[in-house]
Length: 268
Image 1: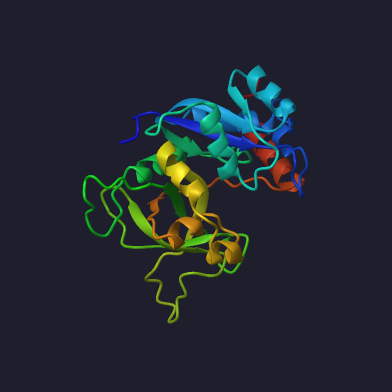
Image 2: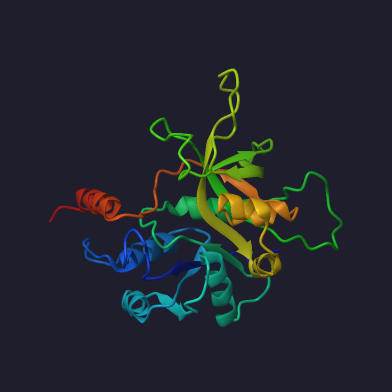
């Protein structure tokens, strides 16, 4: 069992094809990555927030705001890989719970972070496993697709689940895809379309096991790293919650965030 309080680790780098330097964009008066740190620190299940980066500028900005930063390699192919190096640098124990919070989500609801960690602790195997068998665990979050979101948009990752445990609102992932799933043949509305929220919770042992798994065909085809876990036969627990925040990928999306932030700020 993972320790009761988690460490939020936020992978952050300066390079971005559509929005270079977005982690340090600071039209609100503070860098975007610091906004993410502040939101993560508000989660009930989080006791520590660390930014994993390959940039001295990002590290300096994070430390100036009172948060921790660890330097990681510039060679990482994705955030999960960077997170794994950070856990090694921090010398975290195998049972330490960590949550991978995206560095470009300055409006993430702290309750979504808590939900990912709740999902990670759930038993989602369809049959009970022997107690001596240590199962790598992964928890994430999905949210109902909104009317304004196009289920056919490949930039929106969809997920289909097994039956949801009603007491905790957690189900087992059957598949993630950029395609429109589930397909509602008769337009009966029986299955609720779900958008995947890109947040992951695991203990350090589970993260280490993931990093040992070779890439898989569906992962390569869909460009979704979580499919590696499913293709190797491991379960992913998914908490279904309302999640309104969006990641920031473009200057236009950042400008809209700045406008919302200023509108919500207390008036002097």
